[in-house]
Image 1 (cartoon, rainbow, N blue to C red):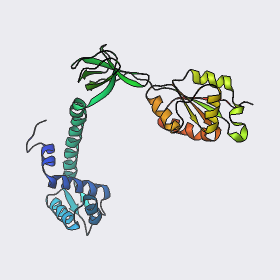
Image 2 (cartoon, rainbow, N blue to C red; image 1 turned 45 degrees about the horizontal axis):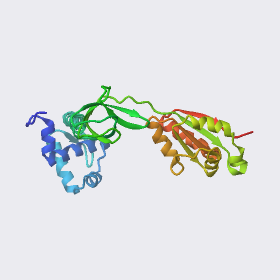
Image 3 (cartoon, rainbow, N blue to C red; image 1 turned 180 degrees about the vertical axis):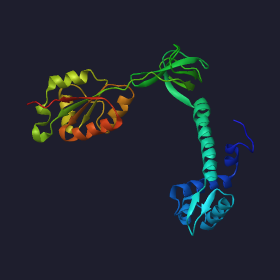
Image 4 (cartoon, one colour; image 1 turned 45 degrees about the vertical axis):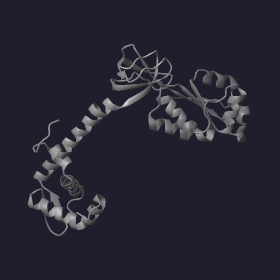
Length: 269
């Protein structure tokens, strides 16, 4: 990225004054024509007098037009100036994200085998965890230090897309104690559903007891709703046994985050 007086990015970043002018033009464009200088000053942490002086300069330069007390509009040249600087800032932010941060960020993964510093590795998801191995994959990176198989390893310069599929959430409804609680649960169906899940959670004491009575201790109880969502995002198939009064709200939560789910009504008739 070149630097020089003709580069809008170089100009905007080297001068607090230019940054202020950009902010003021954006504020005027957002609220024109009725512009309240006091509000702009509060947002920017400067005095109203400073805002007034900036606006006067922008009017003199033809980037803002005034039509009465407190009425201002950004002109065509002002809009072009804002767009040029906004595009430069956007390009710079993209450069930071893609070319700088990605290069210096170190991701933690589990070494799938013995690895040496500098090894080029493929990065993949397994059982909800990030792994690094020597096989070439769609996502690759570079090992930053020696690591034995099964230990944590740092991976830098991560590129590509990690092959990943979100897990399905099996939502198992059980009754509150007023309607029989754990005693009124289809135990064989409960074992069938939870037996195929990588993570099992319980919401409600009745759900916890139903699982315990079936010989399956839940992996999660406190914070189970969000824990299941997090696990599913990491590719783990989950089963959440949940009391009926919490059931509908949890389905809405799953829909809000776009996770797939299957409903199992375990209430015995």
